[in-house]
Length: 168
Image (tube, rainbow, N blue to C red; front, side, top):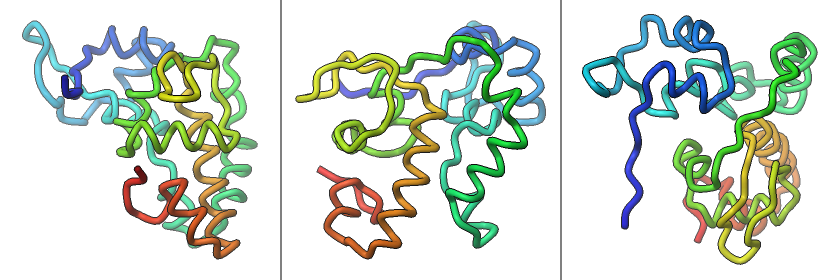
C-alpha cells in the first residue's frame, strides 16, 4: 500500500508535535491550509514543520552562504529555551520523517546507520519501529551533509543521499 500525505487539524498537530495549540496556530496563521478535516482547516505535517521552523534543514546555511554547522550552533545558542523546553520530543516513525524530508526510508535508515540520533531503536534491516525526533534529524543531516561535501567524497555523499538524488 502506498503511503499518502495525511492532513492534520491544529489540535492534532499540537498533540503530534508536542506543542501548545496556540503556538501551532500562531505559526500557521496566514499559511493556507492544505485541505479540510471534518470541515476545519488542516495542514500536511511538512507544512506545519516548516511553519514551526522545524522542517527546512539546509536553506539557512545556503541563503547566508555560511557554514551549516556554524549557523546551526548560532541558532541553538539563540533559541535554547525553545529547543530545550522540557517537553518530551515528538516520536515520529521513520516513514513520516522520510516523507517530510522528501527522501526514501532507506536514506533515513542509512543516516541512522551512520550515527544519526534517534529516540527509540527499531529494525536496522528495514527501519520499522524506529522513533525519531525530527529536529535531531534535521540538525544531524545539515552538519553531516556539509562535512561530507567539504570532504569531496562523492561516493559517501551518494550513499547518504546528499547529492540531490534519492538513494536506494
